[in-house]
Image 1 (tube, rainbow, N blue to C red):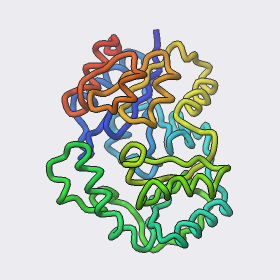
Image 2 (cartoon, rainbow, N blue to C red):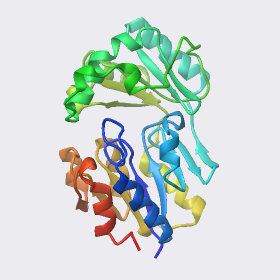
Image 3 (cartoon, rainbow, N blue to C red):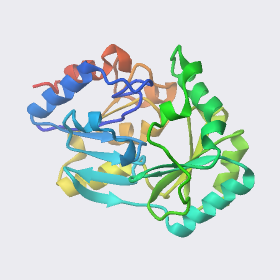
Image 4 (cartoon, rainbow, N blue to C red):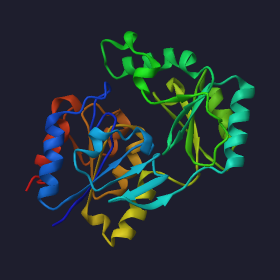
Length: 278
């Protein structure tokens, strides 16, 4: 039976230093040789899908936490913020003194002072993932291809992330833009480091549903693997949901199977456990 496998990237396929375990690469390649389909299903926009990820050999991607779907080079779905929505968000963030970056398939576009302002949040995010050298990280290390100084008013934006001073910034963003999807990341609840605003009514589960309809495939044949709260919709939607060992407690609660940490060959162990290697 052909399985359709959906893999989160950060914390699932790669660790928080962006290291890609050889065991994960070999497991994906072996699963595809066995006839299974593999899609990376991530909050990243296509601009952050660096060559080493494509070179693994995959069948496509879901990006922007569900705003973009691609199958073997064909764009199946792409929902973006309108130019007016982008302008309104940028102006609102600027008026509040919140630094931000725009996430598009064409690139990541940082606000004027994002590099300086985001440093504490980036280091806290890396430290929260257990990296011992978090204090040495820079924003450019975390976002090596981020563009600074570009026009922030764009019509190709998947979502906009911004630095949170506290949870009230997130709550106010929900109130200011009730027609958009407001989220947080880099921590849970009031401990989140970043907020984001994107197209309403999308998540990874919705994008998987769109892709399955395009393929003429059944959710009965699906497997999802993830580690973060944003992965919960796809873990619940798919026939089998796998939590990485480094997952948060809410992810463990919905998983059908728990594997090892990302940097302890967790992905390869899950593939073997589920019989995906042939």
